[in-house]
Image (cartoon, rainbow, N blue to C red; front, side, top):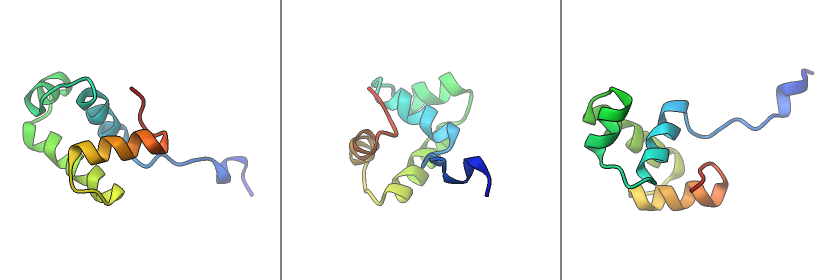
Length: 74
């Protein structure tokens, strides 16, 4: 068995994490899109994908859950 077989795999992708890190800085979808050089639709897709993974129905619920799980820091 490899040494890293039991390492913690992050719940979010790198880009989903970047989006949520900007969300907790009170950035809008438009701001996030501009900062990351992606479309607003792509930002919304990243947020939606993360919410699905977490089983929550809103951005604020997602942030609370990610903070609780230690996946996101303020």
